[in-house]
Image 1 (cartoon, helix red, strand yellow):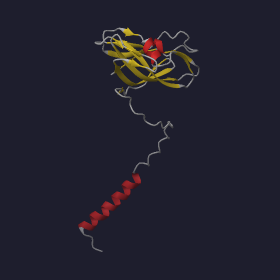
Image 2 (cartoon, helix red, strand yellow; image 1 turned 30 degrees about the horizontal axis):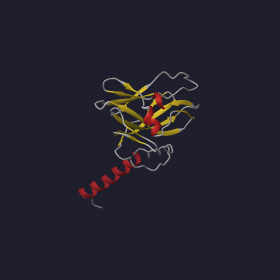
Image 3 (cartoon, helix red, strand yellow; image 1 turned 180 degrees about the horizontal axis):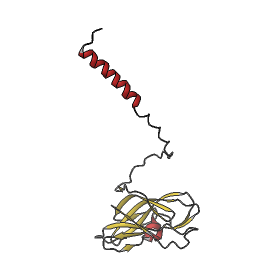
Image 4 (cartoon, helix red, strand yellow; image 1 turned 60 degrees about the vertical axis):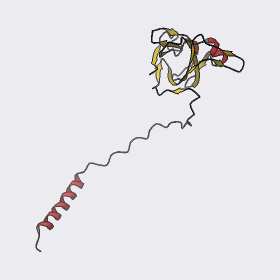
Length: 183
């Protein structure tokens, strides 16, 4: 058999391919299955609300996720209409107790910090009119979603939500707080 340069090149290419295939890395090990997650259906954003895409923040045994922000000129409830001194800011948030015991949670301790450094308390009338929770026991591994209402001066620029997770068995006083930036 007479070999031509083309047939020699073809034989060399086949042999090189066979050698490389034998030296190739072993196939990757399949990744461990990811942690299962609940498939919660998406919900529409409420009228005039700006959805927030902020990462969850933790304070003590409580995880906070801010999910929406709305400016309001008045509060309308089933039994009252209330005008702010300035304007209302409503923050929608999700809290989760990541600890193994209950936490005494108080929505009244959550403060809104504005650009001038002032810490504003929740507006008790707005919270009452909109029937939002006050103090409650946030059980172990419990997730709760609700609103906080603040009456701010018209020119105030909110910068952070100062959160307190609540006393637990490991931190009975819960004097610490965490500021969650709003941008």
